[in-house]
Length: 334
Image (cartoon, rainbow, N blue to C red; front, side):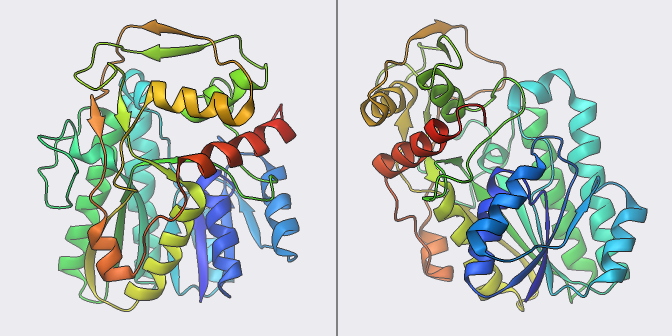
C-alpha cells in the first residue's frame, strides 16, 4: 500500500514510517517541522536505505493537501499531525482546536475529494478523562479533562459521523497511552523542541546533563507512591500496532476503536528509578503542584487489539529506558 503519513517527521511518525517500510509498504510524508526537524527524515532514510517523498507544510493548508493528493495515489492515510501537550492546551485552547480539529476536517474533505477512504487516526487515552476504574476499556465513558483530549475526541466524532454518511469510509481510531523509548539503532527518538512536555524526554535530558533536575507535578495522588501512574508503551510496539491496524482493517468499512497500551501502570518515581538504573546517572528531582488537567492513573486494557489485530506490546520497561538512553546519550542535543 502507498500511505500518506501526516506528521511523519515527528516522534511516532518516524518510527511508524520505519515500520511501514519494513513491512513492504510505501510512504509519503507531510510535516511542517513545528515539533520535528528535517534531520529526522534523513535518518529514517538511512535506517531504511531508501528515499521518502516529502512535502513541507501544514495539514490545515487545503491547497497543499490537494497538491499532494493530485501528485500521488494513496491507499490510506495515517494522521499524526497535531499539537499534543496537555498543559499547553489548557493555556492555548484555540490553537489546539484549530491545529487538531480544523486541520483534521480539512484532511477528511480532501480525502473525500480524491476518493481515499481509509484513515488511521492518532487518538489518545486522554479522551477517557479521569477514568472511574482501571484498566480502561474502549467502551468506558468519554470525558476528557483538557482541550487536548477534547480536540482528539472531536476528531473521533467527526470520523464516526463521516462513517455514517459515507459507507465507503474506513476509520481506524487508535487510542494510545504514553509512547516512550526509541529505535534500536539510536538514530531516531523523541526530540521535542524547547522544554519537553512529556516525562521520558525530560528525564533523559536530565540524565545527559542538559537539564539540572526533573520537576514532578504532584506527589499527593491516590497512587502507590503519590505520583501519577501511566501506561508507557515502547514507540516501536506502537508503530507496529499502526501497521497491523492498517493491514487488518484497511478494507473494513465503518469506524474501529482500539486501545494500544501495555496494560501495566508505572508511576513517575518508578520511571525515574528505572532510568537511573539504565543510564547509571543520577536523576535529581523536585516536587511541584499538580498540573491542571492531569489525572491520577491511566492504563489500558488492550485485549481488543490482541483479539482483532493479533497485536500486543512485547517490549517492557527495561527496553523502554535502555533504548531511550541509547538515543539520548548518542544525541545529547537531539
